[in-house]
Length: 116
Length: 116
Image 1 (cartoon, chains in turn orange, green):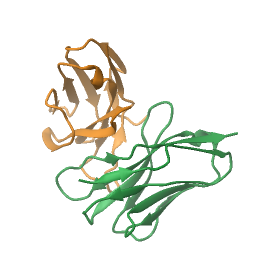
Image 2: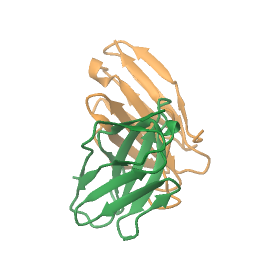
Image 3: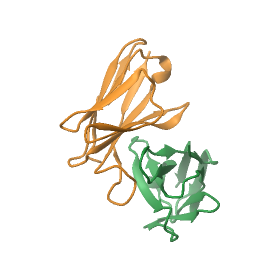
Image 4: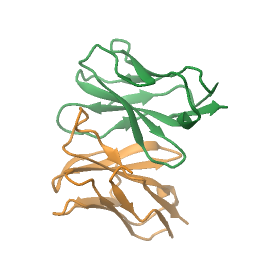
């Protein structure tokens, strides 16, 4: 168990709908990352937050948005869903941003989104 | 932008054998981190090993070691005495160590199968 909690584990929804994925980081971690894993695109970095502020953006669509709340949990909002948005969405957290020792990112188990 | 290439979609070896997974990357940066992540059927992303680009010494973690060739932009993973539990997808990943975008850039992955 990485200590990162993602809910729900599975989500099935129809095209055109909007969903919210939730992530609770490890205790003490200030940085949260969102990744998308799909068969077509592989694993892609979407967006990063640090202590409530957006820090970096990757390949995140305009239909997608995220935020990090004062209690440090994060939500990823996906709207106007398309079939191609079906994927595994991971949240990861780290104490502070970076990749060095003691800043390792720990991944949650992901939310499997299926758009029908 | 950086790219990560894993040229072996799938590999299969016998238990107790040694196996090497290949990874090459392309970046114009000088300071960065490289990682190998393991994704077993449970979908959990698990950090296997990390290498700081400024370190010449290759990283090792028990049965896992890397061959880091900075000039050649190559970062291979060697698994010694392979075990059935090593069966998983393995992803090579890059992270810039400066400010700005701190997300991981992943390769497409190698599916490693350890045969009994």
